[in-house]
Structure formats: structure tokens, C-alpha cells
Length: 106
Image (cartoon, rainbow, N blue to C red; front, top):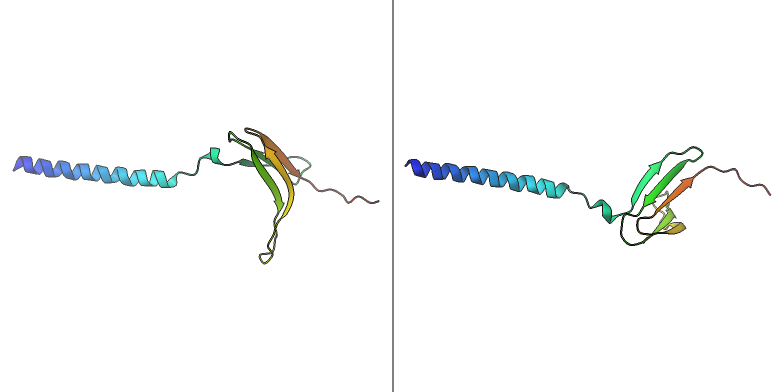
């Protein structure tokens, strides 16, 4: 009788531990974000004399082509205006700044 109880208790403990590992493993796996090496890194900076600056770095081992676009502000309007294109070499970076300028009078 004692050995049967020991087998039942050990089975219950092992089953509980197994389920705990499965649940913890699921939350660990589900919480993982995509690898940071899979996309271009963007960092927004504040620099004197600019309204805003963004720096983009390519962590990939091959070059990527990025496009800077003006997006519509109204929900009903579709379409984008491409302002610039830049090829980022492997491990390369580019810094883009926006600043206020006065209109040239001719």
C-alpha cells in the first residue's frame, strides 16, 4: 500500500512540474519579439537647430533600400509621396534631420 501511494505521489508531482514547465515555456516563447537583427534600427534624436532627427542603422549582412515618404494626414486620402530613397549598406547608417527654414524671396 505504501509503495502505491509513493508512485501516485511521484506521478502527481512529476505531472505538476511538467505542466509548470510547459506553461512557462509557452509564455517565454509567445513573449519573444522578432530578432532585432531582422529589421533596420531607428532612433529619434534631439539635436540643436532641428525639429527632429532620425538615425537608421542596418544590422543585416546585406544592403537594404529604404524610402522616406510623406504620409497623408486625412483618413480618407490614400497615397504617399516619396521624398527620398537611400541604400543602406550592411552595417551602414544614415541620419535624417528636419528643420524649419525661411522661404527664399527672389
